[in-house]
Image 1 (cartoon, rainbow, N blue to C red):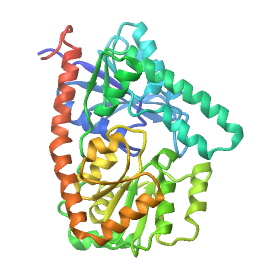
Image 2 (image 1 turned 120 degrees about the horizontal axis):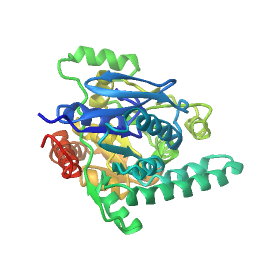
Image 3 (image 1 turned 90 degrees about the vertical axis):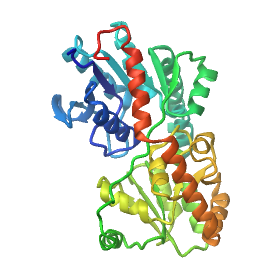
Length: 395
């Protein structure tokens, strides 16, 4: 029997998933295909070493980071350099996640290695949105980083054997904006958080921990950054007459200017709850399952895993109005662009139970039909297989 091809995945903060959709995706991908491929996965740490997690080689390396974020380009260069030093003659394919990784991919390209890059969303636009909430003197810096990210996005379409787009709209954008010729669309899957086997009393106990009751709160699970439009949600909730709460779960950091702005906008509204990131999948599953509706404000990404998690548990969805969210949700959501839009959507949802139920069911059927992990993993298997077609492999 031939040995398994070896794939290095670079551009995430680590597994198990404790940060966001990218990490969730990598955990699903590696756990489901580890019998076909040997994966080496980047894992941010404070020193170099390697260990095994669920059949995957975790490559620990020092990372520059804080509570809210890390510095991808630098961390990925460090990780790539280490992998090239330790495993240069072993790794058959390098899969880079995010456009920041294009700088590292250039090093790998020089050595003639096979490369995949997933540029994620339109990342340079994140800087444009975030610059609205930073001090004036920092705005030129944000502009420079934005230009750098745009260049990295361009490279992500020129360097790899294939560029992976996680949304059809991202695929179309890359082809139009950068004349990308080798792009393949592969979505994320809808992760079903574990709540089976938990009694209703157990669920109530989890909710009581946070002062919540079933169907009496709206839920947002997101990174606390400007492009996720948390400020619009808070503004809308301050305006609407609702007896329900708004629960926002994320990586709050009071040193960050946008986070401080959110606290200011929230004022003294006791019905708006800020909760730190929750990594316990059972607890998060209970919170998702029992919310009245999910508010999704992501504005610059492609297919967002957090949105899919909400859809697969039959949440009614109130989504920011852009091509990415419309591609995913279709007719299974109410859409908004500003606080007044969201206020009206909340009022409709609370007034019309029929609409609430209809949205929930449509979103669930879309997630089941279009975003099953089985389908996603099968597509990745075919992508990897096509990359290795001129190499010795077990296929």
